[in-house]
Length: 236
Image (tube, rainbow, N blue to C red; front, side):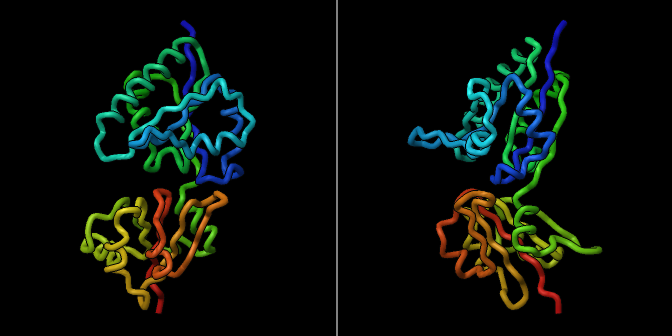
């Protein structure tokens, strides 16, 4: 029985040149490429991953999008993942080489992980190609080491309370906050610019990239989904 192969490919944060050589070669050789996107209430479909893929001169006929609603309710998302997996399974049984992509790193807050669970359950052959996360990219862009020697780092998505953030700052040398679009007020209430250095970024790797070390400036902006901050204790 002829079977295919599944590849999970990380695209990096937005700059098309930040994909790995292995990742690009895999995309060029794939028969099908599945990419995630967002489905908004007004019916609009937007895919950050597709925008990156457009830079690689790939055959658009082999690109297949799956779009998820931008809300915390997971009913529609579960249906989309199942439908997408069934398509992947059919391609696999037909002997195709399949790539599933994700912006950033494919194992870090990635929609791919939900498909990976189904792929492993059905014992399909798969390999994962790692990539650059947004916080690693920001550390490079700002030229501030994420951690040194025995320093501890924590990564927190959508911080839930002032207490949670304060405890993280107290217990770690570096705190990375992701998915901050709805929690700017919490961050503002906790940050002490005399004790903490703050690096804010949005839309890394794109023409709209913005980075600042001034939280007062950052907190007044219209925070997009693709935004994050790195908080570090100021060494005395």
